[in-house]
Image (cartoon, rainbow, N blue to C red; front, side, top):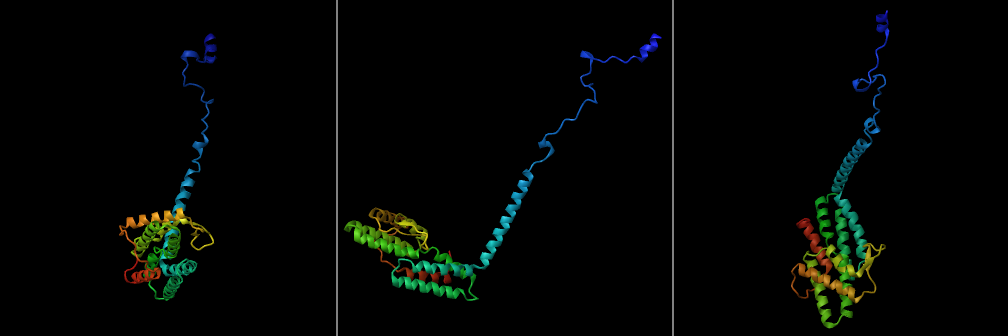
Length: 252
């Protein structure tokens, strides 16, 4: 009897040191819940894809724009020159030089409007024209006049000499519009109503003009021009030479 009862009794559970640490109830175990980072890749792939797509679109747009402008160089040049005529009309150039410059620009515009005008020629004209400080040439004349009226003899002679050296650098194609704008910077101020976006300060100040003279000297020294006074070459003659060079030699 006792043996039958023993067979029906459940086996005691193992606890303590004798228990298998891995033998916990399988039914009680639950899978670990994954974190949000593990469940979803996040928005980074979308951001990267959008960035790449925008880069491709921008590249294509820039390429198309460049091609269109390249094919319409003459049209762009005409529009630029038409606006530049307005700048010259409001410049401080002597009346005869101003009239000659405008006539040359208008003649160039008329030539460019011909159907068979070469695109390459239009590019060459603009490359040479944008380097030439035509309205600034008239502003140098104003500085000249101020020096003659307000500087003492010795200082006046040296100042006029340095300004003439700057003009000589312009004549030789050694000084560009960027150089001359920098030289004139102490005597200019912003004016959004003017086509150039700035005008000469009025009245001029002696110290500011001295700075202009010193900057002009630096340009002359940079180009290793002789330390002497050079004759003033009219800007319309320089323009005529550059337009002819654009036809015969091309741009830079």
